[in-house]
Image (cartoon, rainbow, N blue to C red; front, side, top):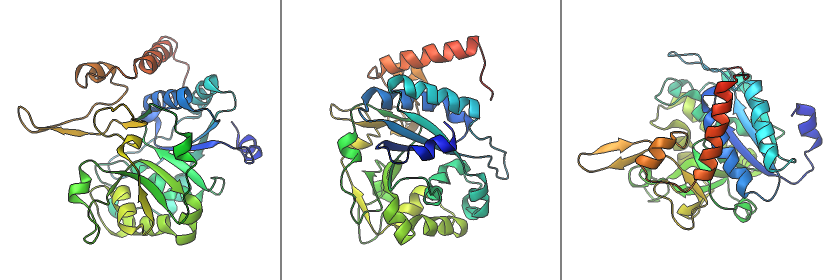
Amino acid sequence: MTHFEWVARQGEATLDILYCGDDNMFEGLIISILSLTKHAHEPLKICIMTGHLRNKHRQFQALSDDHIDFLNDLAKQGNNRNAVIKIDMTEKFEAELPTANINTLFTPYSMLRLYSDLVPQFSDRILYLDADVVCRRPFEAFYHQALDNIDFLGVLDHYGRWFFHHQLRPFDYINSGMLLMNLKQIRQDQLLARCRAYCAKRPMIMPDQSAMNKLAKHKAFVAEKYNEQQDVQPDTVFQHFSTRWKFWPIIHTVSVKPWEVDKVHSQLNLHEYDDILDEYQEIMAKLQAEPVLSK
């Protein structure tokens, strides 16, 4: 979809979704978008912030136009009013580099969501998702809830709640893999602008997540079912395939992503999303047999 087609649709009621990343997230986006189209009853406007970013370790490539076109076609199979739009943030990111955190273990794309207030075409609310988040149930009621005087809402980080929190507010550290963001409020109180400035000066372990948690004065908490970071539950709406700790036979971490289908089955013993994963594997088999997409 072109920029002009997108602008023409601004008056249309949509569920506005945001992802951030580079071409390496293409497979994750296929699965996550398939899961959204399976459960969404209203049209989706899926925005992907990307760019040609770099740090001292490597040069990163933006999500290609061919991949965007493919994802747009994929989304329309669920509803022809769905759309996937590419937002190139290269210039805006370079204008406000998160200098103190540009060379961390996390790629610069992890901080791109901190620039979403700079995109004037974004509506007043947008649902941010990591590419390893899979939708399991309809989410319209969650999306449309009141956000008066709230910058963003999310779910407590499964592990971080115990280690990272405000001294006066225990258990207030939100996982940023799923955030319902009130961009109208954020633009008014300059939350993300303050986060960008903080990331430029203060080194952090998880820069974007930590900055938002520390500086937000108006955040709200929702039930774990909206960002389930461990095993799927009967009421899970979004499952986030984040790294988890195992304590037997020795302490170690386990990181399984949705596109690692064999590991999803063997290590997580999870078959909840097999219909989506089967479709994903069929798509990838076709792409590998007839590689028509540029990298």
